[in-house]
Length: 246
Image (tube, rainbow, N blue to C red; front, side, top):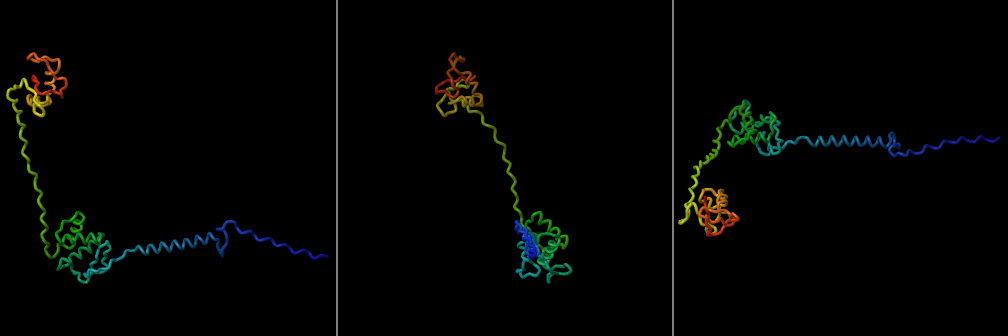
């Protein structure tokens, strides 16, 4: 008898075609990417929050309890050693430091509070917001112990000078010698009687009455002395013409 043939082993399963599903250790590749990416994101978020914390500006002025306030980062971390405990100040500087610290505690910006108090001590003009902060500080601590200098005198705005009413217009000049108001001889340009407008201003006191002169002296009209009118174009009259003025 022949020995039975050994059983055939099944071939191993083919590797998965999706690279993200391949097994690497206890987890597939996709799970490793999610875990590592989440860890990196948490580390970045923690680092960013740690770096954005408010930075306290170092005091280089030499005055205890006073910061520079250059970037609105001035913070009072402890009571200054020269602060008067019973709020009886002997100098304006002590009073100013107390007022500024009080305004900061009320939520005002450090640099704005410092500017408002300093300008008040210098008797400088205050804005509306600065005036509100100073008023709040005065209600808390009262006036500064040392009298302030007099505020600068603002220049007075001169009142406008009332102009006298304009004089009435002068009467129209009389017609040239040898002419009457009924007849006017045209003179060479540019004289008063070289245009119908000028003659109307001379005779009637208003140049806009020139159509009256044109209609009384145009071509086809017989004038009172029996002569015929000669004006074809009201903008074109010649020296020597006699214009009838009704």
